Image (cartoon, rainbow, N blue to C red; front, side, top):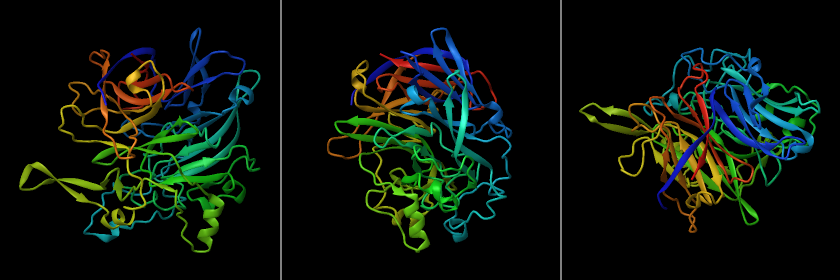
Length: 469
């Protein structure tokens, strides 16, 4: 791997927090347009006249930032149907207005290996003890140019404010299905181990066959697959479990197959980027049938990222200061038995980076916020690589600065290292959190979303750049 240096070319500035960056062709248009979805509920696109509003659903979004300004809810996913140019269909994932609840736990959760009951908590009284409801909807761009909602695909009750996924909707070029990436439900350490329970919607990668008509325009609010009507179950398959929080899925064509890249946000130790060619999704109808017969269903080829027993390449651990030596930390394995039980079947990361890394050519990260395949030739050193971003490198002073890096698949299939990409841009005295990463349809151009604050309530501090040689 070699050193790479790029420039950041500003495209749009003074916008709200950009969560999704996608391109598509509008019906009747001859130019591929960049679309920007903001966390507060706006969707813009770039035209010859500048930035234009495509859709504004701010009134549909839950009230954000009520407890200090930081929030992981809002408009989380936008995907255009592969035939959008002809049928006008697109899909949204967002946290719905008016659904605020008290949360599933009264206080923050940290596992205690000396107290077994903390390792086996259950999410009870779900209809009352939850944080909010996320919805996945199908919309259509009408012939008059106005978008209109057609139907709701899913309504999912979420236990906590965080870990709802981001850039959570993408279409699979392999199956033509809509792919929804859900986080584990939030808090920390996945208190109820939802990610490993195959019947739970939380902590999964789900394929949705949007070509099937369920006949149900507004599905019930659920948390588990077996709570869904049979017609909706028939549209769903589970591609993977063991997800903590995912920043979307990126597909890279390699001859007649596709590499799938997924970034799983870490807890205390590391951030992990995974890659896999083959997967064997489980149809939800088959899963529910097996559960009714008390049969465990976890076939070969079903992808498991290992959470909550594993945080990337390491057993999940929590960190506390050493009493007798304040300069050192003690790392304690949080879920030893779960780490053992998932050690063989879990997928190993392609590469990882760490929250504390003393190596001079690396960085200490905060949170993985974007993963994107790149097959362009404008930046030759990155051709065929997976590019990823971190929210804010811990070494950045005096203002926060995000990190840009890349890795690639090794021919021997083993884990690979990563390399930091040097960026030329002067942010001045402004903070620069790297919050989103996207590409054009051909994956030959890269777009970076940057925000000047960690608070969604601090408005108009966003800039979208193109990453150029």
